[in-house]
Image (cartoon, rainbow, N blue to C red; front, top):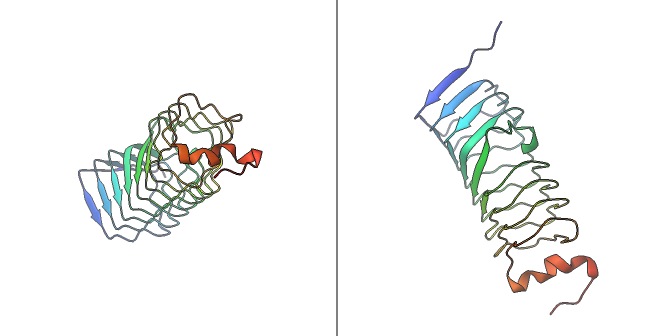
Length: 192
C-alpha cells in the first residue's frame, strides 16, 4: 500500500490533541495550529510551509524528513527535538517566547533565524551556521557552541551563555559589554 499525501491549505486547527498519533506524509500550507498537542506524535515526511504554531506542545515529536519553511513558533513548548533530522531543503524558522530545552540543531543551517525570548537550556548548536541570527532575551544555559558559525549573530540581551571565541567563527557577532563573562569563562577571570 502506498502512503498517500494529504494536503491542507489556509486552515486553522485549534486545541486539537494529536499526541502519540501518526501524522506522517501530510502537507500544510499557510495553516495555523493554536493550542494543539503534538507530544510524541509522528510527523515524518510531512511539510509545513508558511505555518504558525501558537501555544502548542511539540515535545519529543518524531520529525525525520519533516520540512519547515517559513514556520513560526510562538509561546510553544518544543522539548527534546532533533532538528538535524529535518528536511534541510525546507528549513527556515522563527521562534518567539518558546521553551526549547534539550533540542539539537547539530550541523544545521540556521542563518538569520530569530530566537526571541526563548529558553534554550542544554541546546546543541555544534557545527551549525547561525550567522546573522538573533538570540534576543534568550536563556542559553548550558547551550553548546562548538565549531559553530556565529558571524554577525546578535546575542545582545541573551543570558547564561558560554561561548569560546577560539572554537567558533564569531566575526562581527554582537554582544553587550556586560556579557563578556560568557565569552571569557574558560580563563577563570574575576569580572566585576
